[in-house]
Amino acid sequence: MKRLKVGVIGLGRMGQHHCRVYANSKEVDFKGVFDTNSSATRDLSERYDVPGFQRIEDLLEQIDAVSIVTPTPTHFDIAMQCLEKNVNILIEKPVTDDLDSAQLLMDAAEMNGLVVQVGHIERFNPTYIELKKVLESLKVIAINFRRLSPYRVSNKDVDVVFDLMVHDLDLSNDLTEKEPISINAQGLMPFSNSLDHVVAQLFYNNGPLITLTASRVTEQKIRSVDITTGDAYVEADFMNKSISIHRCSTAEFSDKNRNGVSYYQESLIERILVPNAEPLSLEIKNFVDCINQGCSPRPSVKDGINAIRLAKQICFLVHEQNQQYNQLNDLSFVNDGEIIDAYQNPSNR
Image (cartoon, rainbow, N blue to C red; front, side):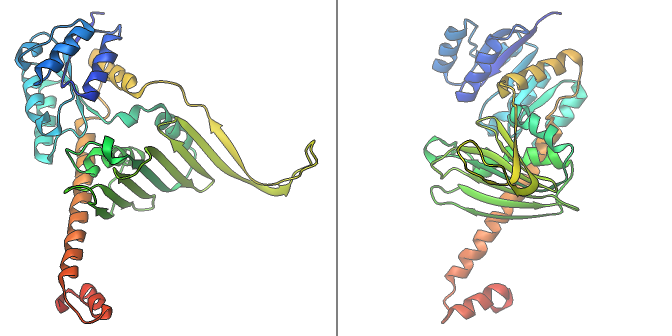
């Protein structure tokens, strides 16, 4: 089979990883790179011995498929250029910064019969792949996602919902395959003028209850999910690639061990073997396979739209709550009781 000719647009930290994976893949022919930063283009061109292009149009003439790894506000225009040139697309998340342009992109991809895969990379994390297998036989009651990062190394171009939480919103959609019936959300802006720390809850008919925490104000980097089921409690760590299943057992004292010590056993812990594979490599392989085999990609633009829709709802709720709190704090009442009454009864304000 003829190797797919590929390129990369956008050579920041993540774009450089795309270059590395393409350069080391035997399934593709890495044909070139582009970035508005000419020095970045030159550096990556020299590092991987591929052409560095001065114009996107010139790169698109040479390739069958491309990774778009640029700031979110540029995604739509670049993607439409690619589709006009009949080039398949792997576009980083979020797919666009608004729903209307994402819908136009999806329509254009379908009209041209091209693959447009959205880079929700956690779908390809080996830990998540194994976790879905574990959950197949369990009745899920509640899910708790945590995605936390230190502020100094975080992306500050967008708020934390679109930077971090959007990953777990996509996983929530994938696990439930349905829309939540209601959403609660609270958030803080301690370090910037956009949301830095957000907690959201998604409610579904007949469950599960999903809680998501995304923060860029913690000093520890965490990417984890804890799941409560009818038969077990499951812990998964996406960074350290580990899964533990806590199952109930008959509580009893065990026989003494060789040191004469007995212990009380109340539960059993299973450790699941997680394959050692790089999520980005699996994501790009899926992209290439979809093109070669004519398959529909997952995550698709529709999946990306569903994640954006939830993210926008959460941001709206948080800003609405914060506005209410600010209005309440501006009120000058004699005692706390009147302030509480004013909050509970808006007509009293």
